[in-house]
Amino acid sequence: MSQDILTTLGLTPEELTEIVSANPSLRGFISGYISEYKLRKFFASDKRISNVRKYDDHDRSRKSDIVFSYKGVDISVEVKSLQTNSIRREEKEFLGKTQVDASDKRPVKLPNGKTVSTTCLLVGEFDLLAVNLYSFENKWNFVFAKNTDLPRSNFRGYTPAQKKYLIATLISVNWPPKPPFVGDPFSLLDEIVKTKQAKQ
Image (cartoon, rainbow, N blue to C red; front, side):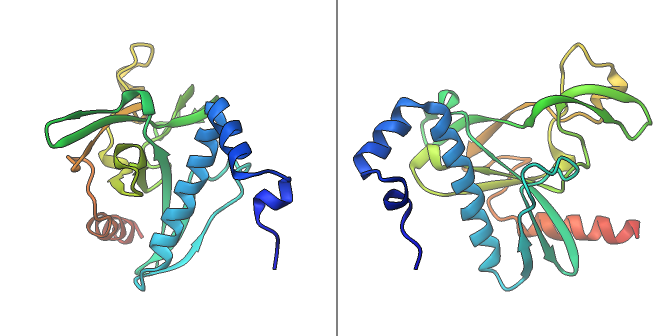
């Protein structure tokens, strides 16, 4: 049996807590990977889902954090977290924002054949967006939205033709969820499967 991570690193729980507290970016990295792990466990525990996998983070050709098979169709999922400084509560509702973009600006080819340099993710680049809501109530809840239902960028530096294909980099999230987000992903998965099968 392998050693626990604290023993491997020669740290006490108190020391690790102090390190993470002093480095907010480290907390963000850890939270992001825990979020992916929790979501993989969620999908893997459902008998309707098979072949849950994660590709190498350095594989830039695949813009998704998790891939699995549902009804014989591969579904790609991009996992994001809430920005902690955006969170507020109004009566019985939590509100926040999630940053949905690539880590670096890169040239991307749009479906119309044109190329643009951007940090925006593309419409159709993945199938499903999952946002972890841990920061709302310290519970590992997620909301889901289809890629094609996400708001488009309104950055004035893009032309109207480009904006059609570029997803907004900052998206509002509510709990309980409001469109385009839902709490149960399976109705969205059915829609994605239907669309993919119609294109075959």
